[in-house]
Image (cartoon, rainbow, N blue to C red):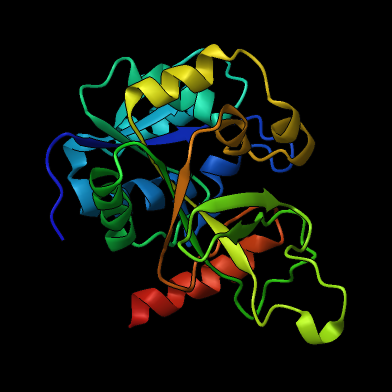
Length: 249
């Protein structure tokens, strides 16, 4: 898969996470999590096209010492608002947002999301996969995804959706959001200029729902299975175990 030089990866990172303060600098096998994500992103687009967007000097020092670019932002309402602010200072047609808590992100999936943005320039692009054996639909830290049969986003929720009336109609597996997105700058500006969380976004605490309320279509692209995010301290051991598997393969 090939992507052109108009693509930049931006990784929003804040230290003061509500659920897990200091999360970007949490050590995974001895390395800060944000660096695992940055290094994998660099395999997709090249080191020179990877930026970390943060308002925290501790994160800035850690990533610059590893040779990555930093865009300092002000305090942001959400990670996507931070991304939108950073995008104004970056020369690229397509901005790919890779979340800083996805240390097992696959570089080929980053390329896949970027290429989908070329294919569907008037749609937001977001990744999805299926819940793995360690993940439960009832886990509110995992946004579940409903799409049309053509994989256009209908809704996301922290509840286990789709629902069912009879057990025989329960879904065989649940789709979950994978936090790789692709935007253009005008889409990000629209998001940031709104100036507040939309009603559904505020309720679910899922940022991409703001675009749904704008009426912006969202194409969901299936990524490889095996995605694990660090949402809480108890996720660290699980992710480290998966990282060991990857490193030994």
